[in-house]
Length: 371
Image (cartoon, rainbow, N blue to C red; front, side):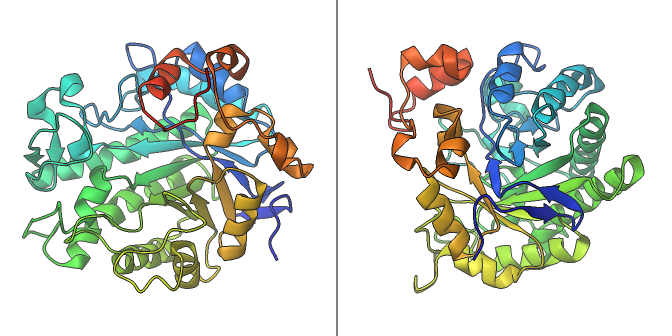
C-alpha cells in the first residue's frame, strides 16, 4: 500500500522524498506589469518545505491568454528575471519547482485584454466566468502561433531554472475548449472528430517536449493537468480524456494531474458511478506514469484515501494555504491540529498576498473564514 511519506520518483530517476505536492493556486498578486511580485515570492517560499513538488499558479503563454487579474506572464523574455527569483525561492527548500502554463481561451478576461481579443476554437461563449464574450474563432495560423507560444514559455521556464512545467489542460481553458465537443464545433483538422479535437493538445505537448529536449535534459518534468469531464450534456467525458492520456503517455508525459471537486468521492459523468474518478483514471493509466490528484484533500486521512484509490501523488491546496505546517502535522499524525480556516489575524504569518486575501474574502464559502 502506498503511503504519503514514502519515497517515490518521477522520470524513473528523479527521487522524491514523499508523495505530497502543493497544488497550483492562483494568487492574484503579480505586479501591474504582470511580473512576479515580492508578495508572491514570500508566499511560495513559506510553503516550499516538507513536500516534494510545488506547482505555481498559472502563467499565461500568450498576451491574450489572461484568465485572472494580476496573473504572471511568461509570454516575453522580460519576465525571466522575476521567474528566476520564483524558481529559486521554491528550490531552496529542496522542493521541485514546476511552472504551470496556460492560455485562458474563452475564459480570458475581456476587461484586461479587450473583448475583440478573446479567442476559442469556435465562437461559443463560456458560462464559467461573469461578463463572458463570444470568442473570435481562431484561424489555423493563430492556432500555430499559440502552440509556438507554449514552446517559448517552456524555454523561459527552463532559463529561469524551473525543474519542469505543467500544461494546463483543465478547467475550461483553451486546451479544454479544443477537447470539448460543447465548445469545439470546427470541421477542419482541429475539430469535428474526437481525433481532431485532441490534435491541439497533442501538438502543444509535442512543441513543449521539443523545446525541452533542445534546452535541457531528460530530467525536465512535463506534466499535464486534466478535468476528466464537463457538466454540459454534450460536454467532454472521461473516455475521451483517457484517449488523450494514452497518447500523452506514448509521447512521454511525466505525470497526469487530475483536478477534481472532491477527490475522495468524485465519479465520472455518464457512468454508473460504481468506480470513482480516481479509480477509473488509475485503471486506465495502469502505472505507466504517476497519477497526481487534487480536490478538497483536507487532512492526512483524505490524502491516504486518495492514494488507496489509485493516485500516486497527492496535490494539496487549501491546507497548505491555511497551515504552513500541514505536512509536518500530518506526518506526526496530528490531523486534529490542522488549521483549516483563515482569518484577518493569520494573513501576515501565512504570507498571504493582498490580492489572494481580497479574492478569498469575496468568494463566498471558498475558504472557511473566521472573524
